[in-house]
Image (cartoon, rainbow, N blue to C red; front, side, top):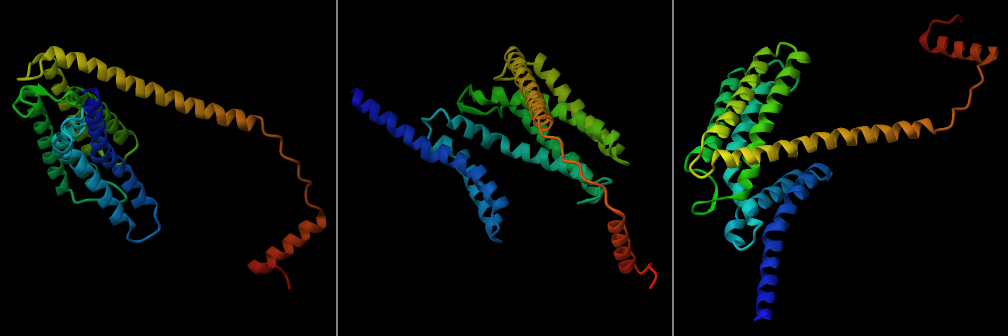
Length: 273
């Protein structure tokens, strides 16, 4: 009985490795191959490899239903639609204004606002309506508790930072900055609603608990990033400080200066014949 159970466990691990973890590795491998290979056909092959990996990961709830990792694929398949709408909407909003490269028509700004709004409403529907990702009936995907609070908090922070950056650095970007402020305000409003209004499957208390965890995660990422930058700068500073002083170079002589002056005059045509 134990031997059969061990063999069944090995089979499940092998299936998860072949049908989930290898497809996961195909995504960064395909992106790297599309950007680094000198062959002209490499970008298309790399993108196809990454796309195939994403599709296989999204299919993992059906290909490897017994693996706990398939919950990540289930969540990815559930959120990929609204997230793409939001990213495309923000792209249209950002590049439909006064940009030097890749400028889009101003009419694309309205389309971008519409796409981003539909994406946010779609994700909000997953929290307050019947669209919540469920592995089995009435059982919320555990990764949803991690993604949703983190996404709202991160979107609000990034949108407000982008708006401030546009006002400080950009030229004639006030309209785009105001739009990003609106996105930040909507995200923060959704955050407050989630703290006080229960969904059909996600209660406000659960959302509040996971929001604090998201705050801790993002704070850890920020602190870790700042510390890594400081350590990197300190290493460069100490390395350059310990370098030997450069050797002094003797000044040119009168004959060398005269020779250089002659060569310059000959080449620019300003010298006397």
